[in-house]
Image (cartoon, rainbow, N blue to C red; front, side):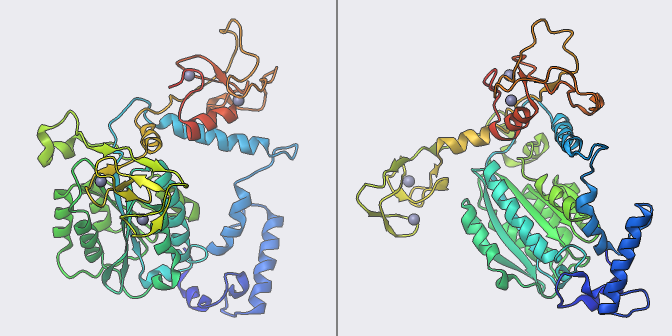
Length: 446
Ligand SMILES: [Zn+2]
Ligand SMILES: [Zn+2]
Ligand SMILES: [Zn+2]
Ligand SMILES: [Zn+2]
């Protein structure tokens, strides 16, 4: 984090390093010259010298992560990134666990004055908005049956920024009006959590209730005892996760631990994003939460009613939709009451039936039955007739093993990855594509 004394000098200026001050406190052009000199000197001395300021480190980090090998090629660096992804996937549980696919999430954004700190570029506030947008897009892609609402914490109050919605555009629109979100005052955790909690109180038991707090402050201004709010969250089975931008606060940690959420303090911009994106896959359902709740008797399954709508072609005569009262041709008809809605998935405004399209349902399904991680093939000695080319893209495998790849990292020196079920071999690119995008093995079809 940047030293506090310097922050005052950076107000209102662009995010260039013009304002870097030297140790004696001078500012302006002189300071800039010195900062650059220092950086040049650092390069000459090599990496052993320390970075003088946190914000200077952010300039070097982007190329620190990619390193060329002796021949000046980047392939080993890229291979390393791929290997890291593979290792992460191997850590994930491969067998089916019970997960909640109908999720309801309220994102609570800290809009207090501490979000104007510049320890993250350009500011905590700017970065939070940017990552929140990416998070929402990715979240809806992975959880097409979910819904997201937004609440802001500003000037000691909780503000509803967007209603619970299953349409990513509605949520993103609330975030795009930046001038309405300008940070001010102190945050109030209790007010914001209470507001989020009450807006989820009507939800059915088969859906998950989650709160994600992006918290940049180290204080909270509450009208009452926040532990009562914590107890209410536990009672309502709301999972609270916190991504802190400043430091750990005991009450935040307690919220996460007692409600089964995740807590993390972002160390830098990249880590902030990682912490957020860890919350995208649906959480495993806890046996405990069921035993404690009202639905405890029903451990086997919750059945719920869903309808598959009839899609109207663009050429059909225009009619009014029930959601916006607009005259249009295209739309979907509720299978129960034949009301016309504009978008799926949604709840029918007339009869309340949940309307989903089958691709949405199928897309949520892959979390329940993930493709088993492929094993890196290290030797062909135990295979009688090894395949000449990748089973998916038909690109031929290299004849000889690459010598410079370490086998311990889960990488195959032969560039082959084998499905444990159908024993077909796949190349690196197909391996990543199958597990991250297709979610279905082309060899065995599961
Ligand atoms: Zn409509
Ligand atoms: Zn209906
Ligand atoms: Zn391939
Ligand atoms: Zn397979």
